[in-house]
Image 1 (cartoon, rainbow over the protein chains, first blue to last red):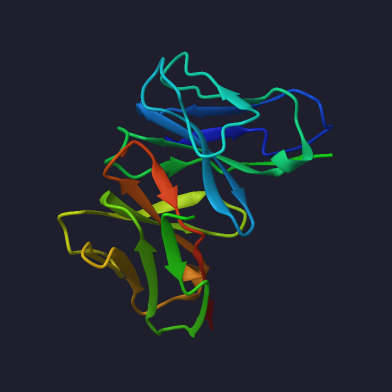
Image 2 (cartoon, rainbow over the protein chains, first blue to last red):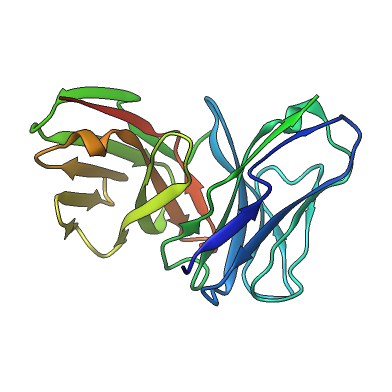
Length: 113
Length: 112
């Protein structure tokens, strides 16, 4: 089934630990995105990639890093987790940046304690 | 401050009634999109309307866009219990249109 796969679905993480959230799509979409969703704050863009090999910073990039080595994968890394990074993280993709709808993954619920 | 803001924040109606949600934004856009999110799930794309379009339809959904007022509305006709979800508008800005900016959503509840 074409779409986006995120892993893990949920995780409890000790503060200070490093964590990588995985995101894989099989639609050959050029653009990929990471958002976090928090109650009362909506969805906020963390990082994006318009095409393989390029990345850019979104609205709330601090504490996060991404890479886009190929078209399909767009992992998000928390170098040293803090409790304020407790959130639901969504990966999304679109055929091209800017003019197409997004396909979202099912999300990763991360709790930093 | 948010680029897109939905109104109302919450809406509760009876099954069979029409539901209207509004979205206002601040800066010029390339396009505006509406998404649905069921509880605990990812967002699902519903409809995209470009800045040079005024109205689009998809099944029971009707979206309008008024660029002079910087506003959009989503109408769901003949609502069903399965329409219960949160609905988000998202704008692709004219400047830097590579990424969407989401509003905080309208929580829609359809009562049987």
